[in-house]
Each structure stands twice: as structure tokens, then as C-alpha cells.
Image (cartoon, rainbow, N blue to C red; front, side, top):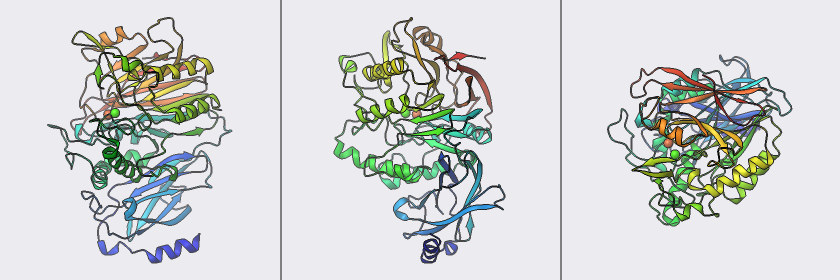
Length: 497
Ligand code: FE
Ligand code: CA
């Protein structure tokens, strides 16, 4: 290994001659295991360019892991190559570290040194943990505001951050406080440029540098409301799949993901599980790549026959079987499911008609019934779904039959809001009361930007909704809007304060 590292370092050009900082996109870590994690960076001396202003040759990057933030006691180090084929990104997968511990890391390229990041290994599978803290977030449209919430996440005391998708947005909006570099993303270079613009944000860099992230994508990493091999315009798979391949490649290059998620053309393995001792398991699902097309012409629509199709699927048959097996055999007391779009039924009224968001599980009621029937029959231990996408907070209960008030509660669902998407909001919308009355399984709704901070213990899970008073100016302030509790052994959630 040492031999290989040395010869690699000798073969690869130094960045010294470029005379610019290649660490403009920050550092990150992700997917903790009991003995390691992924360390990430991506070199770009000019983040405004698709190629990052980097040479067309590989560049040697040295990495170090230490037990202290001053990087005095280095425990592990090595050299890897940042190649133009992978956008000069670096993914280091470490093994052999002690479990449930804090570590610090940094990179060197040429005579440049990156900022120091902090991360953690997961506890060993047999460990009885007293508590686990995590943040979950989604939907950070760069144009819609500043990353006030990411700055708050950077300062939070958590073991991990779970990001549920819409990390980037693929189009340009009008009249927003910030502007996307490109009007629309189609090619690999386009997607790379967009990620570089997001990663150059210092608040987002701080959140990545502070904690390991567990990420999954939703629609906007590729295109609004894509479904399987079909895009929003219902173009042929032949025209959509090359774009999906470019988007997935850029996603991998820009996220702290393991080698198992390296895409093969338009296919990418993102569903997976991560265990935290005996206390909790994160099951990360993929409800985009294998889903059937949205019924009833998509978006907010009255129901139609196609909505009732028993062939409707969100996960695809293979993942659905894996999901059931993962939950049924889970060794942990709590089961956190990282999920993209809202599962709870949300009946809304528009122009005097009842409508459903066909892009959510509401568009796939047969698939949802299979999910809730499984939860009711197998009763996996304390299932809590954490969800993104809607740009509002909806806290509620999953039920075997949402239309029957006596139907049993089978799980909690916390739909987080957005980091910025939608811009400044208000605690209540003019539809909040009406929507809560029409959907009695939902206990809380809020339309401010923010994220959730969760703490799991043996007895309960306390979830805190953190919100920003505004995101359209840099001086937005965060506060706790409300707290919720799910007690162990009792499915469902209650408002605490
Ligand atoms: Fe979104
Ligand atoms: Ca979305």
C-alpha cells in the first residue's frame, strides 16, 4: 500500500504551478460505519467552470485522519488520485478505526491544505447506546435564500445529518435573492457547475465539515418530478436516460458516498442501511429510480382511475422486498426511514375540488397500502419515517386506513420543511386549519424554512423543528418552533410544545 501511494504521488503532477486554492468546495464526510466513513473533497481552482479550472490530468491528494482538531496526532494517512474522469473528486473509504469516536481530517494537494473537517464513526452493532442525535433536512434551492439553517446545523450537537433530497435545483427562478450560474442543467458539465456553486457556499461547507452526512436524492438532482426512466415532459427514455446518467454521475462526484454508489450509466445504488448500535438503524430508500409514472397527469389533481392501479410502485418490487426484509429483521429498537416524498394522505381543496399531490405517495395508494399493511402485520420496532420534498412541515401518523378514524396508527412520519426552497414562509398558511381538519391523522403544519433536530433514547424520540424567521437575507435567525414526541412501543407522534 505504502509503495503504491508513494509511486502514485511521484507520478502525479503537483498543483504548485497553478498558484490557486483547489479547496474552494470544502470537505465532507459520510456514511459512517463502526470502523470508518467516507471522506470527500473535490478540487476546483475555478468553481465557476464545469472542469473546475483543473488540468486534464489526475492530481495527487494526500489525506490525514487525526484524533485532534489541530491534526497533531495523525492516526491514518494516504494518497489518492483526483481524476478528471470523476470531476477531480476524492472519495476515501477508511477502515480500521475505533467505533463511536470523533475524528478530524484534512487534505493536501500541491502546497495547498484544506480546512479541517470533523466526523464520527458509528457505534459497534452490539453497543447499547444511551442516545443518538441527528438532524434531517432537504430542499436547499440556492436561489431561494441563504443557508441560515445549514449554519445552525453546523453548530448543532449531532452524530449525523440526514439529507433527503433536492440538494440542488436544475432550473433558474425569477426575482430571487441569489441566481443560479446556469438557466437549466442538461450535461455533465452543467450539473458539475451547479454543484460547485452550491458547495462554494460557506454555510453549507460548515455543515458538511462539522458532521458526517447520510444522503439520498429526490427529483431536482435530475429533473422536476422524474419517475423511473420518464421525465416530466414524458420524453422517451432514450432521450431522458443520458441526462439521468449525467445527473447521477455529478451527484456521486459531489457527495460523500461509498464506492457501492458509483453509477453505472443511468443506474445508481442509493438505497442502503446504516446501523447505530442497538438503538437505531437508518434505512435509506429510493422512491425515484424505480417508481411507476405519476397518475392523473401529475401534480395536484382530483383522483382518477389510474391512481388506483395495483401495479403502482414507489420502490420497485426488488427494493420493496429488500425494505420489508430490512425492517422485519432489524436488530435495533428504533427504525428511522430516510424517505423522499410524503407518505401520509393529504387531502386538499382547490377550486372546490378534493385534490392529491400525485408525486407523493398519495399518487400511489396501492403501494402505500402494501407499506402500511406490512407495518401493521410485522410491527417492526418503532418505525419513524423522516421525509422531505413538500417545503412545509407536516407531522403526523401513518395509518392502515387514513379514511377510518379507528384505523390503527402504524408509524410516525415527520415531513421536514425546506432549507430555503419556497423562500420566507409563515408559521401558518391560510389553508393550515382547513388541511388539519380534513386530515385528522396530521397533528401539525408549519410553512417556515428550517430542519429537524432529533434525539432518540430508550424511552422516546424527541424531535425539534428549527425554523428561520427569514432566509432571503443573510441575517435570518433560527429558533425552535415546536417539539414532538414519539414514545417507544407506542406508534405515532404528539405535539409536546
Ligand atoms: Fe424540493
Ligand atoms: Ca422534490
